[in-house]
Image (cartoon, helix red, strand yellow):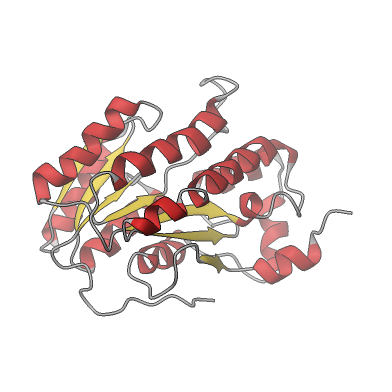
Length: 260
């Protein structure tokens, strides 16, 4: 299902987009799609510079403009350098896609999920929107497992991540009044489990058969490319601030998995 479509073939011509966590997966495909809509793109990575540079090369080969910027979202100084690079390189910051998330890593501390999925998202929003002018848009990327965590159970291995992502969503939504005063909008894109993502792979490894079970319950699961198209479309969609776009399987998700 897709309620969001771009307003025009090149609605982002002359605009600049920052996409967090865009060296691979949904973030990388989103960066490519935003560039195809005319945006200059900051491709963010934490450690995988070669992957990010490949995304930049693809954008440039297609006639677009992009730069790879390494930044750990849990480091406020890194985040501000990345946002400033967008403005210094391309002249503005008009779209901020908060795609990066995590928390299933075992070696980054017990509080890493909350630091990344709540604290870092809020910090990135504030750092980015400080440089935005009227008409800017923030797109927050989440999952049904997180968005509906208060109503719908998820796998035990993912619960803390889901709770932290929902806390991040709530923190961003609380910023809407201040953003609205400055003419900046926030749109949330929530997806079911996405085929081929790192999270889906880790969850299926932790609970073998989980991906297949969710696929059967929903009828089908979106691919990385399909979900990225929804995220990229949200950057220019004619929807009100605070809009939540539910991508794939939400009705079944709620009807079939309500907590007792």
